[in-house]
View 1: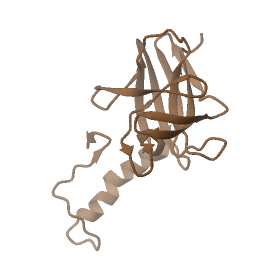
View 2: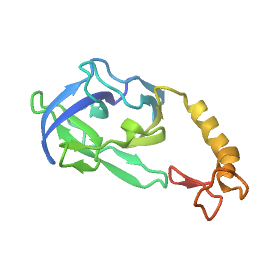
View 3: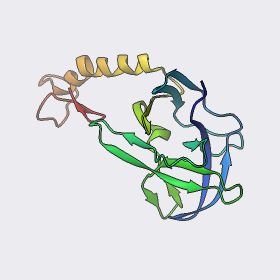
Length: 181
């Protein structure tokens, strides 16, 4: 079975907020694991650079050029987060990317997946692709361990009345990635 899309890191040079001047693609695609007919998975890395040294953000290209599918992310509350459709002016190839916040100063559209770790899902019609975003310097398991240590130990050091370190916190709940613990 073959995936219905390819995923690559691309570097985008923007002409303005709505127009792409140039797209540089990574040489190799991101590996997609097909678990069954409706579930794929893939792993991304934060702070990825493509071969020419430019920052690369994840982008999706539907292999069927006639497809009417408009992919979207599912956020932590399972709400749809649309992707932005862009076209490479040189090749005409259509890509779907995060519709990040525009920076007029740097002519750049932000990408949370470029510098945040965690899990997310992207939908292509009936197909769900589970995405694991990991840091270059530690694994997802290590991140879970860091977060558990923070919740169980470090956080309470800040809140203890007799601690040398103090923090301005009114409750002991930690908000992380849309969850309260």
